[in-house]
Length: 512
Ligand SMILES: Cc1cc2nc3c(=O)[nH]c(=O)nc-3n(C[C@H](O)[C@H](O)[C@H](O)COP(=O)(O)OP(=O)(O)OC[C@H]3O[C@@H](n4cnc5c(N)ncnc54)[C@H](O)[C@@H]3O)c2cc1C
Ligand code: SF4
Image 1 (cartoon, helix red, strand yellow):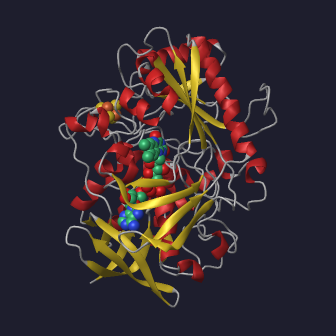
Image 2 (spheres, protein in one colour):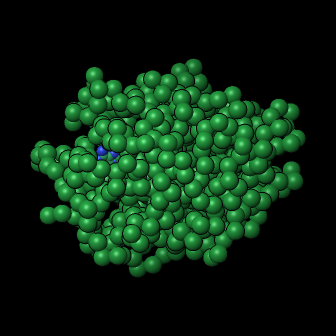
Image 3 (tube, helix red, strand yellow):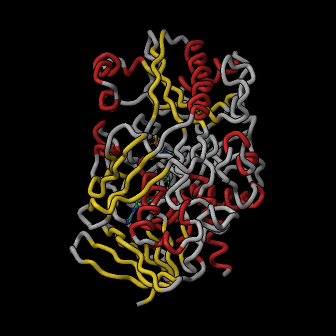
């Protein structure tokens, strides 16, 4: 059988394309290397944080030569992708993010092939499909919207109110984080119970509007075929078209080839370039030197304030408030006042002590691990520069259990990236201090959870592997619709933009 489309990956990029194609009557096969995540009370145990679960696949280990917390990393592999474990923050990029800051872009040649107005309707559609709740009335950088948020925000926890009151006293403009969380009980779904194990945990009662819950299950009911536990190994091209995808089915151990008119890679910003390079499709690209390059992941820092009294005695979900007062710069900063693009600051959950202990350096494990109930935090997200030196490649001399050459990550931050996050971190510390924190601890994030940019879109065929509709240049029937496509990272979480961009690409695909 020849499918109308085969899609690799069941995360944001894959699900949105599948939605459009199924609506257009196409026969769609989705390939996902992970399994469905089991819900129920066990999902909320401290040890059920994603890196400690079977969803964190280590069977295709990525080597991290530079830029990570360790020398190898696994990847979230499950139906719905990392969204099952994500923090639900669902921001639109700002209008000016699509223009790009000259200082951030520098000589990288990064450029969006479209402006905000063109993606705006797809943001609205993505917010509807994912059931986003929010209110951006107080957001000083809020982009234009042609329809309101589908749902109002949930009630603020006492600790969130304290952040708001402190920020207002400081003359700042706190506002509600837009979240993919269900606050409405119905016959079909339970509503959020505001627990404290949300970010990095699967929701035991499926009140998190993750991609598995909101998109994949309904898509299967509408006729999409989903192969779980199935690893895509390589795409085989003849001339300038992909003819088949070779997959390994873990349940049966068989290797087989599937044929389709169109192939869509949505395996994530590390997984998709891995498959392109392992399939040697870069050799067909006029932008070969850009394949796998320009990896971005934000320059993120978590600032934890240590309080004399427990800041969250009610133990409620409180990733609820954001501050964009310095998104486009902080002219009052002692250092970095000249930067015209920084990013956002947002509230973070107090993490379970087991998790804190797992991530802290040896000397601070016992000290801070024992004090987690005294902590509350703010996350600083700074836009990082797209640089050709940062990226992924494959090492053909090392093969994983499926025969794939090892993916090698090599990335570092620029002095500008670090300065941008430092400016935000200083402001975050001020807020925590004004809230009553005795001292603060800064954790620099070096994970790849916000990875984007490795197969970027653009108008220049020689430096952008994808055209403006996410089609891979040089191969007529291959699209890449995940975070790889984003030419810039902006200063907010990426998932809603990945979803909206995939809907836009799928609309163009259907129109063709
Ligand atoms: C703990 C955590 C919290 C986060 N919180 C937020 C947040 O609050 N807001 C936000 O915007 N973003 C958040 N993110 C980031 C967000 O989850 C990602 O940006 C987003 O999921 C990327 O979407 P994607 O479509 O690019 O790929 P993914 O969602 O990563 O999907 C890729 C899929 O492809 C599958 N796959 C990969 N390789 C293969 C293969 N060879 N064969 C078959 N299948 C394959 C994977 O298993 C996965 O399901 C978070 C991430 C993590 C890890
Ligand atoms: S906070 Fe709400 S959505 Fe998040 S895991 Fe808890 S119940 Fe689920």
